Image (tube, rainbow, N blue to C red):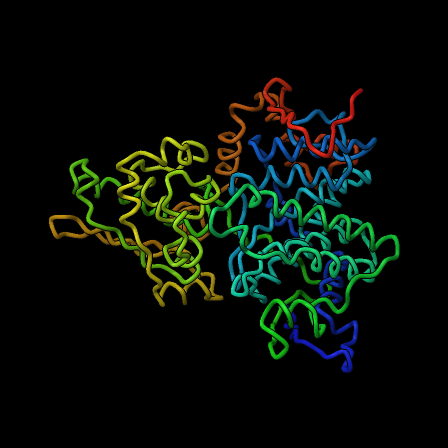
Length: 500
């Protein structure tokens, strides 16, 4: 790996193109290195049919294109423009907050890069190897940026790293020259610097749409670069660019580590899977709550009102993003949106303690959130930042890095119960690291009531042969759902479906 220092230059200083971060990212993307076998095994795709997905799909189907891209759940004979397929499929992947995560200096969901890459590869009649090439490059860029550049401390949303990653991945899939990828990366960053209000306060469905939007804009950026157009430059180092005006300012320096030419792209293996449909920083704590449940029930004899209070000692990030440090009253509101509850560790701990499990639908059901004894327990939970957990969160040593905390339950009789957890059970260093059988079980759970068994098996056979799929077979890399099982959004909008 090479450590690249990134800082701001005045216009008079004129930083050389070869010294710009966007150029270095483009070089990595254009460096075609055969993927390691275990990297290929890590690439996957998923989708579900919920309200946000229905809306996105309706918008996408208003943009049909012959020999275009397929939509999750829709027959492969119906194809749309690739940027709109990326939009609809990206929302499906993100909706349940149930795909991979990577946490370092910032947060990320690198799997959000997969839908736009598949969409473009389908539209341009590329093969499965192109998808693997694109996805591994996108993950490499995304993880490197997340390790080196913190966005959230400046209240910039993490899609600012996703846009450049998707542009780089598309450049790798299409085998574009460095110059084209460089321009696309800059364009994709420029249009994806949104604020974190999408993850603050009353969190809306935009949380699912935001990464899909980033992927859609990245496709447009690559198309524009391929046609010979340039982007704002230098987008990272310029005196009025992202670092100087949105991040740490003109006197700051960031370090981004990137692989050397010829070095395998393996960052996808650094990312973490989710066993529970919730914010990643809640994963380990859900496991801990489920583990504590029996002991707490024995202590209170089934009466949850015997709990005086619960304190979670955890990292800075967990406390301020999904804990009481966020100072969001919505995180205690029984009528809050699913997206808000997903970002309330207080709600998540209360439900996981009472139920001993976490379900991607039932745990967020409005009736479940309004259960009186749950609401009372929920509002007794507070979080505290603990330096020990913050230091472990930021550790670069995988054996030390942790995303958990210590839970202290106090009871009315004056006793208390303490336990802690460092990483989720599904984490590589956890109690039950996810294996291929666990991914299959998770897939089955998500599609059981939506997709027929024969279709499930067909899709898995295709997904497991990703590297060898032909362009024709790539059009089948989607789950086909019987039309009667698909909800349709018929609300009028600007985009209208084309009538046959």
